[in-house]
Image (cartoon, rainbow, N blue to C red; front, side):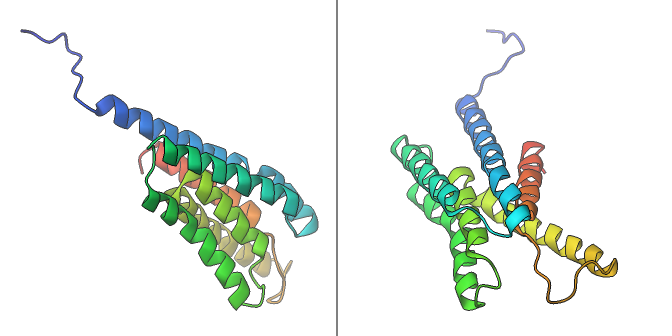
Length: 168
């Protein structure tokens, strides 16, 4: 029996659909940060109401994924770790890291998963460090200055989604 050139392996379609769904959730995690970016740039704070809505929506989405068996319990636990770590660091450092930043990472983890929360946070830290270095060299900030982190988190999450999309 000859094959027509299209070979379908068992399970390949399901894996592709899951990867496509993951990429959509990662993109949604990046896009949901846009209102937080605007308020963080303007007021250096993130709206508590919007963050609560994000966290509630993320919790509902993660619960739905758990019920549909699209993610496991451990994946859910690991998706909360980056945001939880930032919230703990906020308390330990005397709020040098804002609690809103940790809550945004927590929401990204709930919606996009552990990978995008970790990659977005690490890339966001890299972008914020590069931004601080440029601003410091240009003498626009001092060592005691504070910058908004959520825009850097947005750029990191978007870059992480693109890296995942292109398979890097």
